[in-house]
Image 1 (cartoon, rainbow, N blue to C red):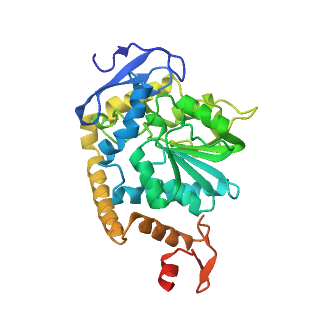
Image 2: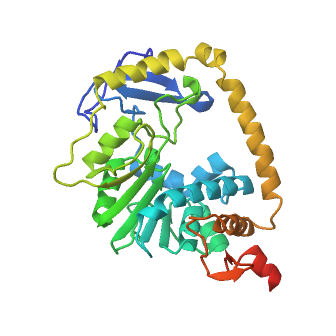
Image 3: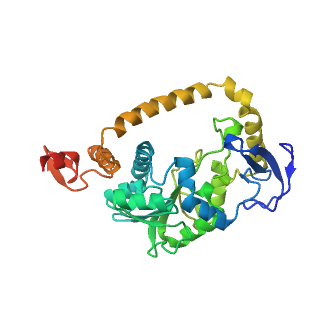
Length: 353
């Protein structure tokens, strides 16, 4: 079927429109993959949503192997995950009560669960891949169960924060997952979601879509989907990105706007014009992305070689962060050296011992 033509479809989960436009027939690496755009709201997804059992088996056994090259993270991947987890913790910790109950769905190798536990919260995780879940338990000694949002191990206590960092785009039914989370949250509980942002993406269209991402969101479609599940962005969130903290909807909250036919048309123009191969090659993006990747790789190589284990690397990062004023880990174990708070398990304390 030619790109741009109408694609047969059932009603859109977001807006009810039955009209789709085929935006790509290949995914990354040239693999066959039909991706469609809802003309009523701009929600982008696989043309055919895969079977639940097939997806569950894929993430339990093959996803990490195919996309990360193993059943436990490489050091550079752990470093990236640690830095990202610490950035999220700095953002989210001030919003929580002391000793809040935190659940990370799609916990990967356990970094966010680890850094939130070290910040004093009761943190647990769910990770569908058996290898990464086992790594998290072994390396970080964190409470990670194998499974997803529908696992029997889902905590029964009311939660103060649930996070899904680059998870929702992988789910066959993100709406069901968000409704399950809504029921599990305390009245003042929060849901943090981060997904790739399809709007304004700096990639050529041929490298934008791939099999693991069933759904492709923009800020408008993400907020609209969360609203349907009972959530709205908390005050002060940056709504131009797809990294948003949501609270439960309350009477008087106004439904979001923006996920409409005009948004769909703007996305279509972006993908067919700004993300064409010619436009991408003529932009600065190919050079800047390669340069940024080179600089990042050199820095990661230097950092990862300083430490004997991934756990030691994680502790060193937290030890350094604990010295920063306002850090969630500042004085986390209350021992002091030279007038400054030092974690009891810090590199300095271990050397003194």
